[in-house]
Amino acid sequence: MYAVLLSAVLVFVAELGDKSQLLSMTFATRYRARTVILGAGLATATIDLVSALAGDVIGDTLPRGAVRIAAGVLFLMFALLALRDSQREDEPRPRARGGRAVVVVAVAFTLSELGDKTMLATMTLATQYHWLLVWIGSTIGMLVSVILAVLVGRTLPTVVPPRLVHLLSAALFAIVGVLLLVG
Image (cartoon, rainbow, N blue to C red; front, top):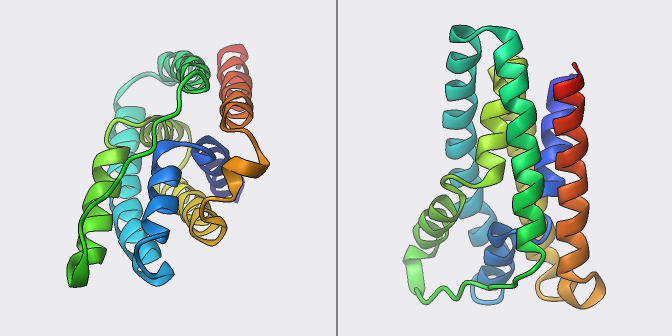
């Protein structure tokens, strides 16, 4: 259960103010909430499954100590990326309409997440914990983030500065990275 909770919390916090959450907020202004949640949910479940399975293979293949150190370094890199993201704000602008909305949301969401820090975080966590638990937790964390983005719409950036959200995300990644390096 710890792996599910850790994955969910880490991914949720990392997604606050991230491009996929901004994308969800933007889509929510154009499409029904269920369309955005369904499209993002399909993309999230798929991406997180692939990431968790890849992390499981890496974790089983490489020595645990080396993987733990590499994971710690990766999380510190995620912290630096979150700090970098706190310096800029870019909101994607989707343009598609009509019955293909779920597919458009899923494709856009998948492309925005490929190589993203949460994808790499899921992969990294799966080197340390059972892939299924990490997949479940990461998917829950991402879906909660998407649902929050859909429900809040554009109001979150007016209440909490995106820079603060990125700084909190950076702090969480740094803490996890240091804990992994310390052992």
